[in-house]
Image 1 (cartoon, one colour):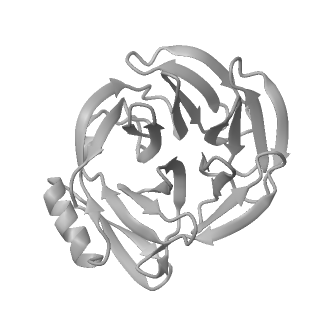
Image 2 (image 1 turned 90 degrees about the vertical axis):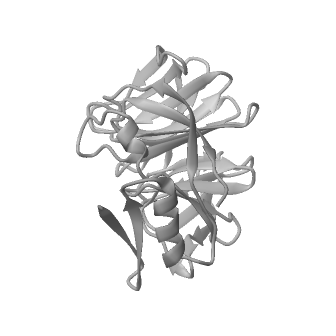
Length: 266
């Protein structure tokens, strides 16, 4: 049995990966964190995904997947079909930028960069660059709650930003059982909650956007065993929500598949 550990602040260690079935993983996680529900998953469908994509951001809109990828010289923004993963439209970032999370606000797509403090804004329909913003922190994940862009920077802090000028409006600290959770990465806003990948783990946290408290989490242990992995950096990262059809998609960096999943009863 393999075990990964994520440090929650300096005080709490949480086991986050158990090879085997989801019941085993959930039982182990519940034993450590008995106060909040732990969901398993059921795979409903799987779709092709470009194994070369270092997935940093993902969202679903109007029948298409939009994906932001990272690595300097390889960072892109793309629009592609779900069923065949055919690229409909793509934009390559300058080689000096390491692309990160993406999000849609009305007809604009925002794309973070990792350490360059740049936020690029594009026209949704043709990827034409519209403007840029300054981001004072590192850029990791991005989501939208209908009023604010929600920004992670690799720490336990999540900030709420004004979409018009990318100025910070407020912030929360993500906690689990009272301890801060570092490495908050790719984000999605689903039914009033922030869903967040925790980098280098197989967990997705479901976070109260007012308090930062993790009210439950999802154990995706073993999902990576059902796809081909393209590198030793091929970790879970990428959450997309189809609000119209209530479909949930997940993938990972350098994964050969994207999965449509449903949550099992905790």
